[in-house]
Length: 192
Image (cartoon, rainbow, N blue to C red; front, side):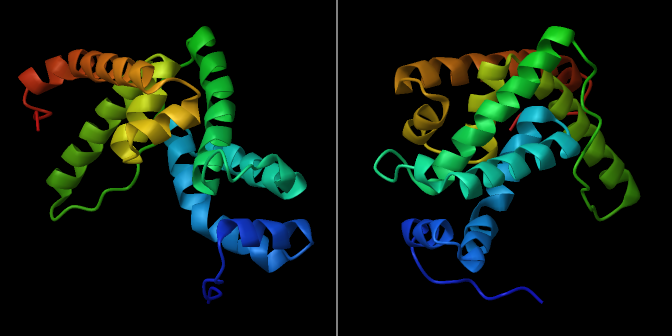
């Protein structure tokens, strides 16, 4: 049985964490772990790497809560920016080494076994195409499409101007569309 949510703003919880209150830190973790992990997973394409990135982000916050500045961004944005930096380091290394593509897919229950297999195959194709994008394109696409963040928030996370984010997002979508075109023509993917 999980503990009920603890009331308080992120800043209050972070101050309590700095004073040694473990429950305050656990509440911060509960609030943001799924968002940070989901972002890291989509950036790295690896469940193991996403766990490592998530763990590292929260460990860093626990060790140095004073690094967070509430005037600059919300705590969720700060944690996503930390996950971004670590994910980009991993992705950049993989990009340079041209290591294979991710094979992890999220389980997707379907009404029938065939639909389940097709859905998993579609997810795999999109995941592979996403993994082939340059890290700067991949990150804005993930933040916009999977995390549903506004351009201004994405700009804060990636440390760029909103205009640059728009350009990256446009190029990422165009490259992803091109990479998936053959699958659309073969009927495996549909354009929505």
